[in-house]
Image (cartoon, rainbow, N blue to C red; front, side, top):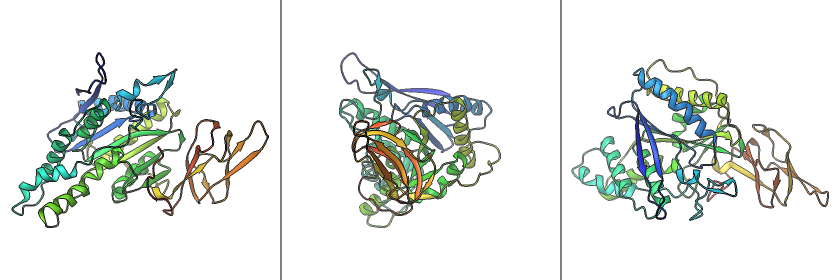
Length: 376
């Protein structure tokens, strides 16, 4: 294992933070995977999964079983890890800018196309290695005038040339579920089987450039930018499979769950030929893939005590009562109904909520929403 430390731009004199990346396996095989934990720093399950992955990757490296470079970020957000206010952790939003740590990653395709185009001017085909090098250079050139910008640049620079990116998150309370792009679903389906995912949400553009989309969308965007620059069609494969893995709820932190999740991720690497040995057998698929635009939130119309009426992972019907809001002063009870047929895959962990709170989400089959599809 090689440990690398990436210094972030100090936010003020006398302070400094660094991003730490652990590199396992050979870096000269042309294959690279990035796995990062807790980009939202108060989502703890990924940190424990990374702990188990570190031990298992060291074992696999020692036995010569790794067929490519596996980069592990045990914590992807040192800024958010340090943000505590009155003994409460705030790791989702940067306290300086108010920005979500998993938004606003740069689209580097235009600059990468500018770097790569001279190599293709005589009609040559695109070399994937050269394309990855152009994306790396474009990332390295990104401006970083704040600590948050320097973190985003460092994270994207580590991931942009990877063939597989696994971004480990968690929801408030949830079953394990995945986010990825529709074109990548055939390659992600084995991961859904191995992890036992209960929902898979698909979108080409979910809004505000989350980390996984910045990595995977770089390839179709690069092809489009090269085609426009060269005046001829350029085709590129989806050379980066990026997935957001939601590791259940933020309180689902046990060694048993984390070890099992780490092993499922390693089995996925083995399925893709990145770990020596026989391919694992794939369990049955526990869900279907559905559009993120079909994921319907249920909002609290008023504040009060939140009482969930159905368990996580339940299949619900449109109009079915899924929760109640109890007014402890007036005694009223407001019943909340599912807006669609689907899987209730995530819900609010707090039991007293304000008006307008998203209290749960149901993954439906029909795309009915547009615009920004992710919750802030």
